[in-house]
Image (tube, rainbow, N blue to C red):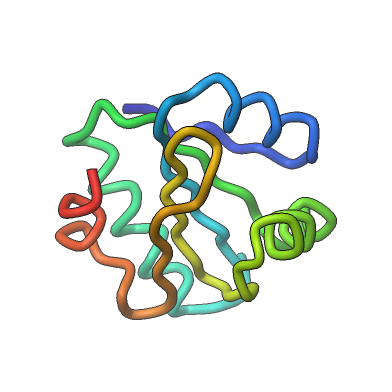
Amino acid sequence: MEITDIQTIEEFQSVVTNNNQMLLLKHSLTCPISDSANQAFQQFSEHTDTPLYRLYVQNARTLSDYIAKTHQIKHESPQAIKFEDGKPIWNASHFDITADNLKKMV
């Protein structure tokens, strides 16, 4: 499944409303741990039909803060969040973001 990058609150609201389930990766362009998580997310994308979205924290800070506040999930970077029916049901950060852990969540 292709990873779609999102940057705005409106884009996020649209994708979370229009997908029964989805995975979102909050990715930092300056963090080596985040780079590893992004590679795991990309590897996982080759083996799933689950819709995948990514936001770059440096380019979408307002969106990142909105997700943390609205869904009461402490901001981490990197951070993977699984949404089901518009609500977060799982999240992981840093070294817990692996292709295997992502696979277990879908």
